[in-house]
Length: 371
Image 1: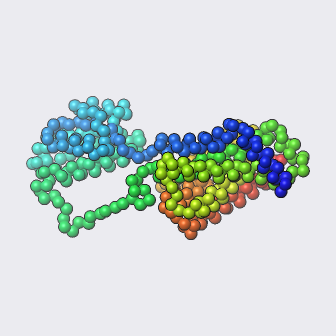
Image 2 (image 1 turned 90 degrees about the vertical axis):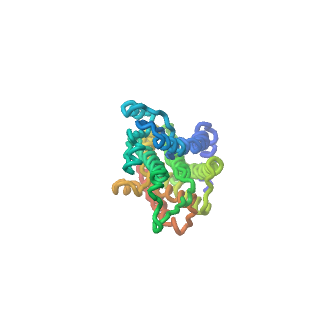
């Protein structure tokens, strides 16, 4: 144990001596956790709309005014024709186009119905779907409140069910509550997986690993001496991330801190095994960086960071469930946002423990073969 203690002292001194590594491990994740959730905001609150009013009646003006006052739409143009209005969508100045036909008011009064045209820019499918639904809701509300329908006794029948709903765990349905815990996991993955791999590969590049192999230091001592400092750094980064989420975004874990840190500790062990495995297959830091980047991209896109794993096709679900990132993102959201206890997430701990055992065993076997 004395040899291991000396190795740990050497690694910690080396880490804190290098200002670039310190910035990468502490300052960079903090800044990214502050900036990323603000940039990765999928909330649709400002939809640009171009209006073509071919009727210019009191009803059409009321409809346009109601859309503008809804708080979701910004009227960017009142075009004279559909051809001129569609240019706003083609140049990405408008997301939705509303065309009110001629005789809009007279048809409503005489026939009790009238069609209007809605064109949506569907390049951004999420914004198109949400913006279109917003517009349909505003139009439906306007249709219910216009005098001609009130006169026709359009009130809801006595037996109609009135639905009252609320958003649990995220009352205002803000996207930051969904994405901040996941970004914290992603930053922890970068620290634990990439940095540990680069640190070991650097020993290969400078040639000191051959000198270590001929010293009385055993391989398990060398491996633990390399991985334990990054496990400690990862737990510190995780703590800083929780504080940033609380101070900047007002997100404080509802569940148990003990459960949260137990999962973080096991997850870091799995990540360190992943980094060690990368170091056994690469011979320089450039190779290790590209291999780590390849897997981090898969983790980021298929772990439920942006979209739910349940909405993926079966083959993608299989890949997602084979990555430890998916399980830890699911756990941290459950503990931080919903207050889930250990009995609700213990299966995820078994998955992470299995990943940690497999990755570290695989990495140690390969390290013995290549060293």
